[in-house]
Length: 248
Image 1 (cartoon, rainbow, N blue to C red):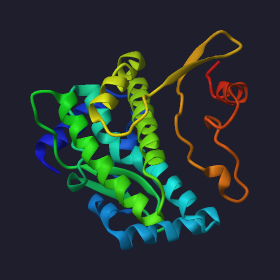
Image 2 (image 1 turned 120 degrees about the horizontal axis):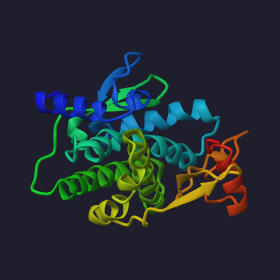
Image 3 (image 1 turned 180 degrees about the vertical axis):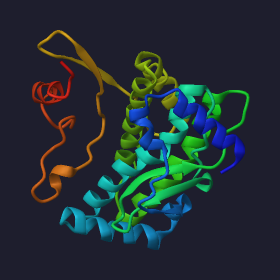
């Protein structure tokens, strides 16, 4: 990691609640592999094979979607968090990322070793995110022989969710989530607009959630149900489940 990247990560952590630091720290319980492996057809095929052991299914569409649902968030977390907290962004380029990889295919995080440069931090981040998302989605879709568009929708939700998480960790969720629309628009590609919804509790408090545009297909794995925030649920049921997670 470059000295500049080290310093930017430290500044990012300093601006966030300590309880949220784990997402940005190196996982000592696993090794690191280069993120460029995402474009290796053999490596990607092996990740899906390993995921089949976790989810007890051979459905490539389900396995690839679940893998991308978690991985997309991991890939963007350092860059989005640093951008929200400091106004500078750690690089999300595949060449600059190390994946915290577990032997069962799970990723617990990533490390970025470079800092993006450019006259506009948002535009530089958007350009780098577009490259990473396009390259990754192309590889995942080719490996599983599935459509690209649902994976782009997952990327939108990953960005919206990561901005919300970073904003909460910094103590300014409204400012962070206001970046969602301009950032996604600048990324371009076939991405739906990011959305949020506010869910109130019986005590009168409310909490902001990502209003997802994508489905992770978890419910298609044996013995699994739809996520609490699944867009496939009725709004009433979805809000009721999310309300259970709202602090009282």
